View 1 (spheres, one colour):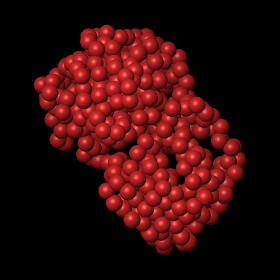
View 2 (tube, rainbow, N blue to C red):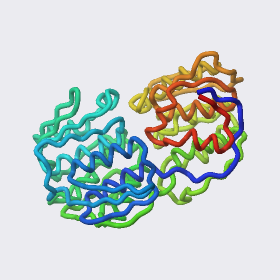
View 3 (cartoon, rainbow, N blue to C red):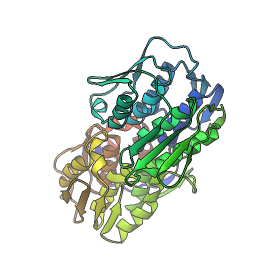
Length: 400
């Protein structure tokens, strides 16, 4: 794709939140009866979650952006002896479903992309070792054994996806459980998003203090009709076009949303003002687009970046590689990245998307300033399949 220098102008509705859609679909699957979930984009990650729901013995129907889920209490559902959960490239799907697979105790297999199968699972490996559950993590992941209620102790500085996975499963067990998070808690907003959706489906789980979650057992998910709110994470790319001189009115974002990526509103302003020092521990998905704006303006120092290397790509490293093609100097350390502002030039080399949706969208935003060629744009199907259709309608000029 060749993107030409152009400005975005117009009005658009924010894409539905992929993070919230995962949570709504899973809670609906765990409930008894029919739930109707409105405003869902059928991205590749959401398709992966729908596929895994089927392995729990749950049926769903898709009608446009509405999905009807015919839930089944997982502990009672009838499933085959061999369940294969295909998570494709979705880290959320993988980590959310592993504890659910352990509810019945039957054999389960998880498969997915080569990159996904290398993502760390140490939290679950430790739990399985303690509870005598078999977990083998080689080419795929094999699990056999039944999860038991417990007082779980987990590092707070790991992915919140592990905590969310446990939060989905633990209310269905016969006894109460707790999750104590050691060290500082990163990505707390994602945990709170899980608690919010569970509450909609009749589940009580709550914070006891800053670092401890209490989850009563013997609960039941209650089917419901619900609406997925707009996504701040993906809206950030369109707001970035505004920050670079566009005039887009973005509608459909919930002002009081718990989404941690809502912080982009503040962070973008700081990057416009001057060299900014920003902590992205609670919003790692914003890393690539923040680096893009830092390069376009005055630069920035970003801390809390260590988890970027275990995303769809090593996001810190590949962003530094791609920004260098624009003439941008960077410094990458274990948990810190510095982007030095300066004059951008049109890349002489092709920009590579690294099979990572957030790298593609971030680079596309920057190319609207300089122009240039980018390959691998199909990666946007993972989270926002119509990204390029949306920016074309807003006036961004590109051709294949």
